Amino acid sequence: MSKHKRRIAVGVAVLAGAVTLAACGSGSSSGSGDKAAAGPSTADNKPAAPSSSISWPAPPDASAQVKAAGLPMLGQEGQVLHIHSHLDVFVDGKPVTVPAEIGIDLVKQQISPLHTHDTSGVVHIESPVKKDFTLGEFMTEWNVPISKDALGPLKTGAGKELHLYVNGKEQTGDPAALKLAAHDEIAVVYGAPGDQVKVPSSYDWPQGL
Image (cartoon, rainbow, N blue to C red; front, side):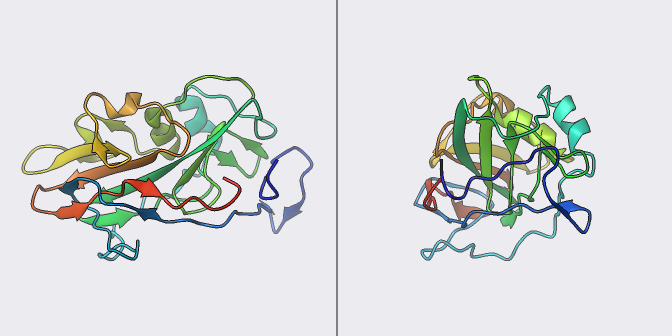
C-alpha cells in the first residue's frame, strides 16, 4: 500500500467541521495527441490558455449524486480494485478544473468507489468488488452528466462539438459508456472546430499512483 493512501472511515479526525485528507502529489498531462476543439497544451505541459470561466464545483450533497450514479457510499476506500485514471475537460479552448472531493461526503464521512481527492484530475477507482466503472458514472457524481450531444448544460450544434479522447486517440460512441482503465488519459473536449488544441496523450503520474 502506498504511503500516499488515504482512507475515510467513521470516527476519522474532524478539523473545523471537515475531514482532513492527505493529498498525493500532482502530475501533469502531456503528449502530442490529435488536435481538437478546445484545451491547448504547451510543450512544458502547462495549458496555453487561462482556465475557463466555467466552474463546476463538487456537488454539496455528494451522497445524493453517488446514488444518482447508481453507486454505493462506503465507510472506507475499497481495496479489491485499486486503479486511477486521469481526466481533462476543455470548454471553448480552455481547461475546466475537475474539483476535489467528488464522491466524498465529508459530513457523513463516506466515500464512493469513484472519487477525487484534489484538483489534479486524477480519478481514484477504489472498490471492494471487481467491476467496471464508467466515465458516465463519474460525471453524474460530478453533476456534469455527459452524453453524445451534451456536456452538463452545454449542448452540441450551432457550431459546437463534443469529442472524447483516450490516450490521444478519438473515441466513438456514447462517452458515458467509456470504461475507466488504469492510467488512461481521458480528454473531454467541447467547443468549435476552430479552437485548435493538442489533446494530451498521456499523464505524468506521480510516484505511488
